[in-house]
Each structure stands twice: as C-alpha cells, then as structure tokens.
Image (cartoon, rainbow, N blue to C red; front, side, top):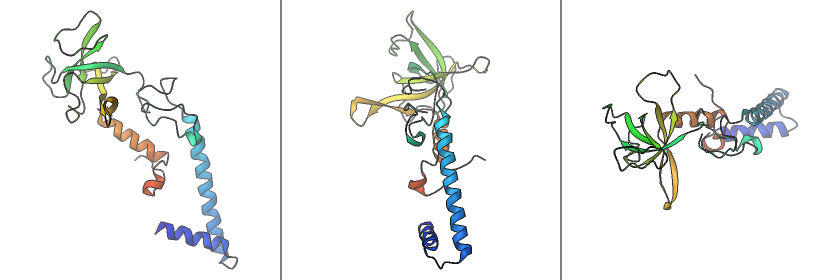
Length: 211
C-alpha cells in the first residue's frame, strides 16, 4: 500500500547502509513534494475571490458563502464565488408563459411574496431557468431562491438562473440553509477541492487537473 511504501522510503533514508541509489531517489521525491506544497500555498494565497469584498455573501463564477481568504494555506478562500445574486420567491413552475419544466416564474424585489398572481409596484416577476427542476421538492411555489442574472444578449427566454434555494436546516426553521440548485455548482466545488488538494487526507490522492 501507499502507507507501507512511504514507511519503506523513510527507513531507506534513515538507514546509513541503504543503497545510495535508493537514498537519492528518496531525497528527490521529498524535494519534489516540498516544492509542490510550497507552490500550492502560493497559488492559494494569491487566488482571491472574485465578487463581494466582505467575504461572507453568497456570490457567480467559482466560492460559496465564504471566508476572508486570510487563513493558513488559503484555507478560508472560498471555493466558489457566485457574484452578486438576487433574492426571489418562486411563484410557479412551469412558468405560465413558457410551459417547460425548466422555466419558472420567480418574483424579485421588495416583499417577494409568492401567494398572489400579480406583483406589486416594487416587485417584478421574471422568467428563471430552473436547471435542477424542483431540487427534490425544495424549489416549489413560495420557496426562497437566489438567482444570477444572465448576461445581456445571451439569448433564450429567461433573464435569470436559479442558483441556490433556502430551506430549513437540522434545527428546523430556526436555522435555514442554502442548497445548490444548479448541477454545475457541485462540479465546480469538487474540481476546485481536488485542485487545491483539500481531499488528500480523506481519499489519499494528489491534486487533480482538468481534461
């Protein structure tokens, strides 16, 4: 196993009469590991999150509600930054005007009540892409969701995309949690965690690179 191989390598480095070639191989591997670790620390410390300056808001592009980025080895740098999101409430899915299960009517703006069919003067009902449909029942009429605005000229009928949905946590209504409502989020989080080597101790692999 890998653990036994490392143990043999350490023993070879410590035993004076180990073959010179084996001792040199151990030293070269140790030097490569040290250089790789130092490089990883530098890249994490300079990565920075794109988006909110306060480091604690739900944000697009790559850390979920994150830290300030000042921790050791960049540990508190968000894995995913969603940029500025808009809070809304689901009115219906499918939309009244686009009969696709992947399109929802979502009310945004002050109040965000989803119990009436018409918006108030300070509210707007938008067409939102629902890439994970109802998220296992969490994204239903009345649910609070967080949306990203689609870039101008992106085409299609929707102006927003549902990224997160709020639901009760383990403590019930006293502690709500945010659940990813876009399949892309899990993929980005997993890729970034592997790239930073954050799962090395848990699953025993090194950093990963994309195809």
